[in-house]
Amino acid sequence: MTTTMTITTKLIAELRERTGAGMMDCKKALEETAGDLAKAVEYLRAKGIAKAEKRTGRAAAEGLVIAKVAPDFKTGALIELACETDFVARNDDFVALARKVADFVLADAALDGHRAVGAEGAYLDTPWGSETVGAVVKAEGAKTGENVVLKHVARFVTTGTLGTYVHHNGKVGVLVDVTGGADAAAQELAKHVAEHVAAGVPAIPLAVSRDGVPAEKVESERRIAAEQAAESGKPANIVEKMVEGRVNKYFAEVTLTEQPWVRDDKQTIGQLVKATGAGLAVARFARVQLGLE
View 1: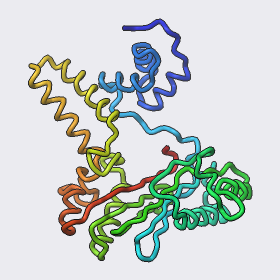
View 2 (view 1 turned 30 degrees about the vertical axis):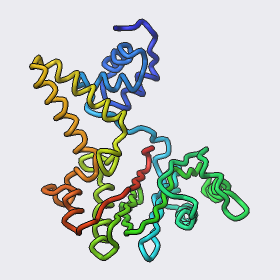
View 3 (view 1 turned 180 degrees about the horizontal axis):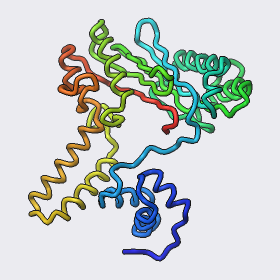
């Protein structure tokens, strides 16, 4: 039911940024969903006006991604340090700070997993000598004359082996944990998987397997598929199959092990892992990209 509430131009602009839909379509979607952005995105997708929600959060789009791995490939770190301009991102002081932070994260035994940090993240309070991570970043960042923000940190410790990939421009980086083996084949697999995740094809994976895909994402896809299928006028049993087919297609797009390998799309990442060696598995991954939250 359409509401009579006032939809601000700011809200319309945000929805346009997320979906790429036209201004009037965005206005109507917001009116139909009482100004709820998430529901408005669903509305536009269900109508076929927007195919997917764009990633947002590009306020700090420059900087550097650094990956570090211990010589035994058992401990690894990945960090994203953001700044305002590409000029500063290539500055020697900024590069030195990014490497210094990566070394600190690699040695931080209290950290396990991937954390978003940002300007007010809890990780900034982590002690660093007589200072804190936040104080060090702020002091060193001041030398550049720009606002410098530690956006993401990740640190993995594994019983298997770790692989990393950082794009040549330093704007995308991945850390992958492969368990079940640590020989040369397992190490090569970890590198290949890291490279694949960095590519983001056909989409940036949300999880290793279906169980890890956020339930709210799956339900959103199911609702959109159900609305589109219902409009087809087909019998209920056919509609149900159409919905399940669309949800399965979604899983294949965003689940790492079901994605076609970027180097050979005739096999999935799951098939690549299985072919590399019995018992091998991708346990987890972290991916950071400048400008994405």
